[in-house]
Length: 294
Image (cartoon, rainbow, N blue to C red; front, side, top):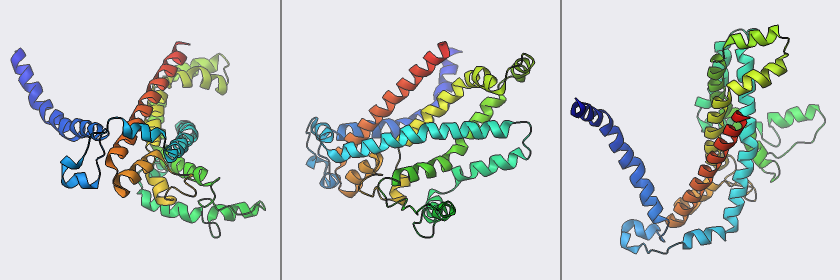
């Protein structure tokens, strides 16, 4: 009986595990090995041209001012866009989960549409919104007698502009997850709290937030991981400018690897980013556990 179970296990899991091995583990291990070499465009034709250089890529990385600029921009994006996206998603989920709201399915579909919309189309629309002369946003600012802003050309406003677009495009996905979490909270808790005279603020702090803690942790982690991999938005909207103020760490990795063909250096950037994401995930998990115990 045990042998039959093992055979069934290998039959059903074997193809999936083989695919993970071929398309995940082997490329990751190969990239890690490449990060210790000077792998470049000449090494693509002949692997013998790649030389082992030890930790030189990593030491050079931490001496590279452009790397620190990209890392600073990425952290700025994650620290601002991450909590903002979670808060907007939670607010939208609570509004759509309210009993007074009608046509909930239509609103959910409307808010989720940006998530499944092609980023190229979204970028074209938002570039028009951000246009310094004819953009909708500057047109609205004119009603308040405010001067127009060069949203994508001003080093001060370029990253906040990308943050606004990213939050708008991605909050619908987290909103759907929050709605599922809200639907799993027993209504008896709210009814008992209402009978006891608790306000909606007290119900939110004492019932909603604690019951949504696992959902919030999941959303926070996947949002952080996704935002640390910021690439398409600045690549399409600003090309990392102006003055490298929107250059992300993934965009810098792309430039080094596929524009200048410094594959070994690019691989080193990738593993530094992996380490940062791993540390961030661990910290978020520890904080969430402490808050849950408190």
